[in-house]
Image (cartoon, rainbow, N blue to C red; front, side, top):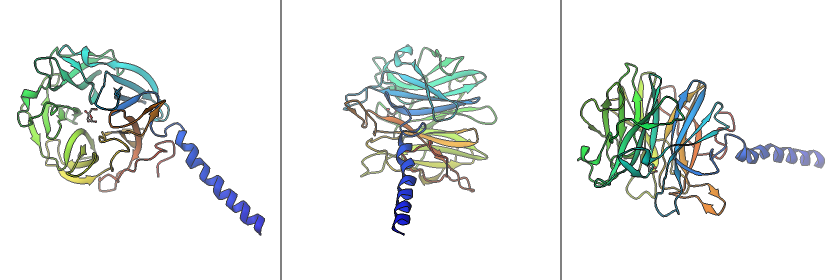
Length: 327
Ligand code: FUB
């Protein structure tokens, strides 16, 4: 009897082992571990997912982001590094600060929408677009000037109000860009993807801070974004849905809690091979003697699941990530 009980205990212990081992299995979090990465954006091209992220090289007191890195995967578990695919100084108008970006495909070309600090005399953050025939570049400045500059959004007063572009192409082929810090803005893009096609509108999104990500599933449009309420010590992700990219948006609540050890969190959502995924970053990675934090972040990924009514199930930030099957 005692022997039986012992072996039952042993079996129970063994059964818990994979939970620890999975911490380092392919697909576990964080997914990039040799450099600090932030502000993930993902793009599905055929049977491959491309992941873009800004590189954090800070001394952990302020942002220091020299370039954007690209990675790709066919199984969401093992990632191939493609190195630096763009840096702020590749834009004629920019000088530094590789903040959040998104790459989208249209008519066989890849458009890299990126935030960077504008050259003097305008030293505010601005948004530009670079173009390539390949998702891994080389990307070249598509305009020679920024697409969005600080003076174009007088409703927002600080000089980092024009950051974090997300670009979404609707079923009718019309492309839209949303962006902004503290206030969210929306504008239609011309079919050439490098010029604005109409006025910039402000979008009212409850609890909005920054980092919007637009996507559509069925008839429902989603905007997922970083939120920060008075008294919070960091951002969480929330989302809203609408019957059109132009709204009206209905707030659907929190999707995540705060990221570990980071005041920011930043979303990207894709569907790949029949499964939806949610990318984000936290500050939980340590590399050598460099501890992670708000300015030394690490990209992570979780499964994303919808309810039958199209709302999204709350996302739990896990160590196992996608190394284990979805529930
Ligand atoms: O990485 C710099 C900024 O921090 C991004 O643009 C924001 O979304 C936040 O993650």
